[in-house]
Image 1 (cartoon, helix red, strand yellow):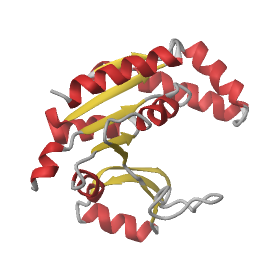
Image 2: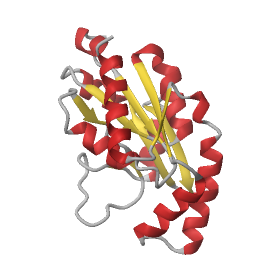
Image 3: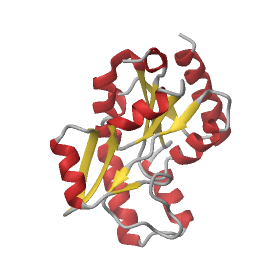
Image 4: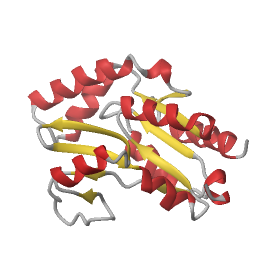
Length: 193
């Protein structure tokens, strides 16, 4: 383990879809916190202008399963048959070797697994919507999903909310600016400890 790797810390964000997590993470990446986003691996095809090694590491199902068998993933999930998503261990080394802190945007189970692996070197932050009703409103306002998909996301969110108490910190996103401010304070305390 290199000296810079010992200095780099891990910041894990998890939240139900529609909680505002991605917006909060994007705003925090603009701050001077020496943070770099961990690029996930997936077996799905690139969408639009997505690029390998920039947006995702695009792998075949066979390549992904080989990495699972070799223990090269921190966490992974088979969302649908042969549709895998996961985090490569090499991402932690790539980012911390530059002296940066790693930012993860992962599902609740994956986030808790990474936290377990790295202990005090990681902080797990759960971004929580003010209520399920507000979450449903936000998903409907996006206008990107069908009624059925919104129902699936709301049902999944109810399950994900049961994991919130297992995270180091919970930030309720009732007001986006306040949630960003609160999260930045948490990160400053964690990174400077």
